[in-house]
Image (cartoon, rainbow, N blue to C red; front, side, top):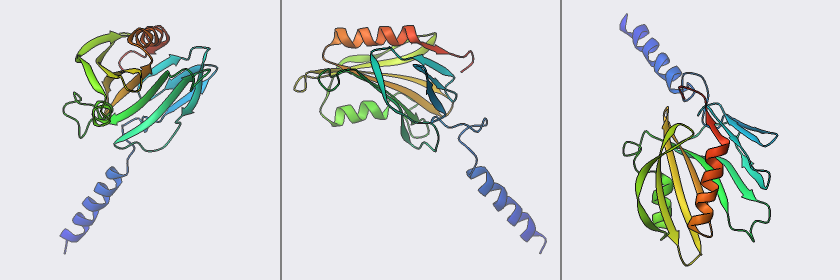
Length: 184
């Protein structure tokens, strides 16, 4: 009969661990906030200065995130006439191929968007990202997926615009306005 309390205690511990937040700090990737054109995400340890001519159309602030969740959506003033977007999502690394194949890439490819350059590493704000370029000629859009690994999730920026030059300009602005806390 002594095994029953041990089994019950083990089961209770397993249930408690399963209900723990997604990292030891109790934060999920949705731990973000926008204040005075600054997006701060505590989970990823990052700050993003939002350009004055862009609007925040969505910013997640709490909740679970599995296996993928939208964290931030930015659109320039004049959208949809100006077809530029910048989104930030979080993707669980638990089911990924070592973080190499992001769901954002798969979704673009499933939608018929063509990869126009092989994935390559780039450094932005002192952090290593993997960049993949796509084009959807029928829609007249160019897309770039920038992913970085952190904790149990990848942070994924997806940028879309009417041309590669415009996407590269947005990425340049992103690089100027993005910072990471050391160790994140």
